[in-house]
Length: 477
Ligand code: ADP
Ligand code: MG
Ligand code: ZN
Image (cartoon, rainbow, N blue to C red; front, top):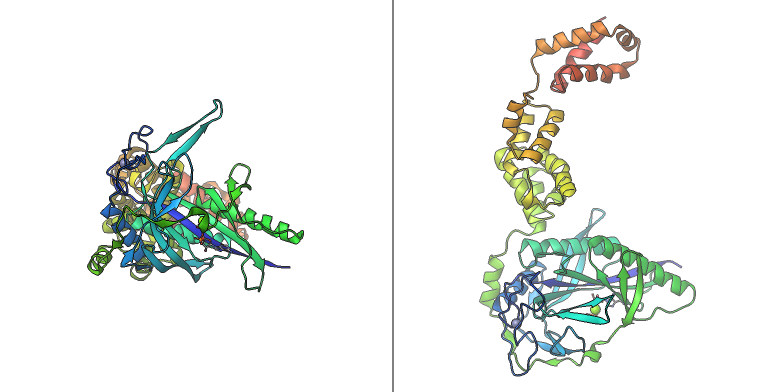
């Protein structure tokens, strides 16, 4: 029997507000344990939460950017559970009336657009963090994160493969970073994903029992964990067993999932309306003005790059994967407007450099102005492609501008026809055997001759002119 996976994703995104959702404590990551706390986020009795307006604005931004309808009236609820990192004994969340619903994201699956529904977006507070000491019999609780604002974005079970899950997540991640509501740092936990996975016989309607995977801290791990979970479930069903509804933890080192706990149902949480907060009423005017403040989103930017710069879809996709990279690219174009050649250098050498140095585009040692100038030098035949790579490496090391590097190292391309002709004639004279073979039909030797000229000119000869002179001289026996 063939099986089909059914996947739905829940994403928790930390909002980039400077203060927490119900108190004035700082949200900054990395403070000493429990430094960013107060009676409200410590869950002391007798204190009251006050909603952070910025957090609501960020939720609206996220909702509008994912085609959701913002609810004019929504409500906060208490989700009750007992855990050391949850000081109040309940989490303030939204349950029956979330801040937004009915959205979607379009993802690219092998060149086809597939629409993934978004069920809802709701606001909630984050919990604290427990850490456990393997050597001592104790656990530690850090409540700096308690009360940091989150939105949870719940997808419909529309996803059908690990790759689709990866594409959906990358798209959502890019959007939240574009609109500047979440820093997207998966390792620090500001963008976390739980994956719900089930299987069903291909062609059958009803969904199978799902498991929920946690601890997925990179896009790659999400895809890997979903794949092995699909395989595990198929294995169980093929042996006549039944998948049980549970929460499973992914272990990246062992690349397997292990059971963590039985999956709670909603009623286990005894949700009820938060009596300390009024319903959240959002005026239509506010939604409109937030909508107007949104920047160009990844899909729009990608389409504009294709239309205006005539870039291939692939290039446009890579270049718009983050707003910073897209800005970098467009700043290069301000210096030199050859989109495709600039794109090649950004996607190739620049991303390669950032990758090996572990830097973000904002930390790039090569400025966009310098990269734009480099491409201009290539386009104007001042330097060859090969030399350009040397100049790029030097820019990466020293941060100098390319014109200065070319001048200091006298790397200017040799385009002087008669100078190159002399060199070619010398080479022909000193390699009679190769010349004879070439004329006898071993035309592959052309690259040998080109290599000789390049050696003679330290790579500075203009390859087009060299090729032209060589074929002329070699063929005129
Ligand atoms: P909970 O908060 O208990 O996990 P939700 O009803 O919010 O429950 O659903 C969570 C996610 O599970 C959603 O993304 C939904 O698309 C997905 N989901 C629901 N049923 C299935 C299923 N049978 N197989 C896979 N995913 C599912
Ligand atoms: Mg869930
Ligand atoms: Zn506080």
